[in-house]
Length: 458
Image 1 (cartoon, rainbow, N blue to C red):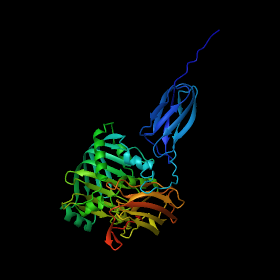
Image 2 (image 1 turned 30 degrees about the vertical axis):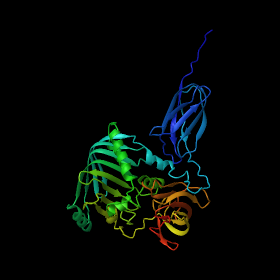
Image 3 (image 1 turned 45 degrees about the horizontal axis):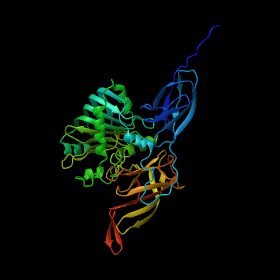
Image 4 (image 1 turned 180 degrees about the vertical axis):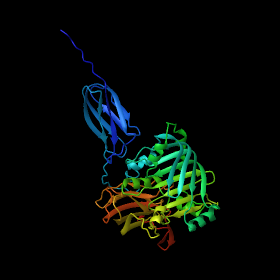
């Protein structure tokens, strides 16, 4: 009689974690538990959203996953004799339940959107060496002569931020006589040829694919991470006493939130692609080359999509060096100063305001607006950063997520709609906010408002 022994093969549970849009989610804690284990096994998803937990004997297991902004996930899986089990996970966005706001208490949904947080907080993952990689954008040519470029992980299926350190150059030539004359008046040059040593790229176009195809090797990201931190610190610092008009426009009351602006574009698949290069040049220390479909200097307001801006307070070159429509628009003869870049149009306001003896303002604004295009979920509002939003609710009374960082940082206000807009439909939001340093006591029960405190869709 022959006896056979069967040895249990240690198996692996592996898979990819995705969000509801199908985009991979990095840094998700995945846990496997079961009777065959003396203690649960854990793993964290990588930049591609993958996880792997090995050394598992045949049997029944529970797989759970947790990530900020998502509902907890749990499901069961059975391992028989197969060496590997593919177990993919799709997370759902955390439910936005209605809640009663207590004065002075901020909604837990403030700055909580997981895709916004990924853009805001993620570190660099993929890195490549590059040599003479060229990005042609409108009238500008960016050449990465030699160095390292690294990228944040994808959000909503798109890589949107990259950082370069090394040797690069920007070549830019205004194509029309009026812009060329103005450019020469500011720079004493007919074209810009600027060498730079660092660059941060924020984009929704094909920049990642272009640079990835030109890249090679797997360099360290340590120096590139330092540049990313420096960029974030610089872009998020609100300047309360600007030293120039340009600095006031870009770093004071209307300071944009770069990650919120990117999230707005990524959430809308119909958005035209954008590109921004923030360069540390040898002569122009804070040079920005912008291609923004909604306007390179939107808060002026101005409909021109292409901008070349240098921030250097106290110097003649602290200026908008170039601001015009895309070269493609000029060639198609469609460029117009009457272009409407709004995504919504305000229809009705109802604002209830209370003013305390110390001048503190508390208000509730009910804002109704019409959608001017399909697909938008992130709506930007004009609201002083010193006015702090405590909650946003939709017309059915449910709390909605919103973005507004600290008032001393990039504290512009953005509301996140639960669903994408449909062109022509009306939407109503109830916005509660409060703050100081907005009004002044003019005497005899009258107050003077320094600037409009109501949330106005941009």
